Length: 162
Picture 1: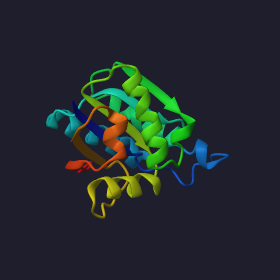
Picture 2: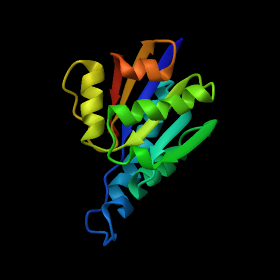
Picture 3: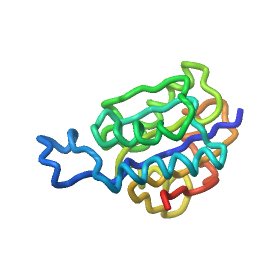
Picture 4: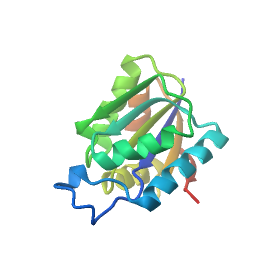
């Protein structure tokens, strides 16, 4: 099957928000502007997620909420503690949820650096910088989303908010 995975780094967060923990830190105004712009670009490219797997941190949840204003509702959304500052191993375990639900189309992962940048670079076989609100779009022919993300994938596009 054709597996398409969009790996999205959260939008710009508010370092001076006064949030009690890193996990609770919200987006800043720039992040709230950029997340929907990235979503518009994804929609224009035909990369509309059917499943969204998102870190449960405030800034990733808010990134998805801002993106969702520009995208059709996915079939399934799940907020996972395991994706908070996660890397490829946790992402592979998370996409197994999409496989269990019989997902087709695009699976979107919303998370954090440095894990996302490391994973994207490994999947692409080249150094890829994942700035805030960037989305790396990958494709592969594989038996499952988990198998796809566990191997090498083709980088179809790197989407930026501007």
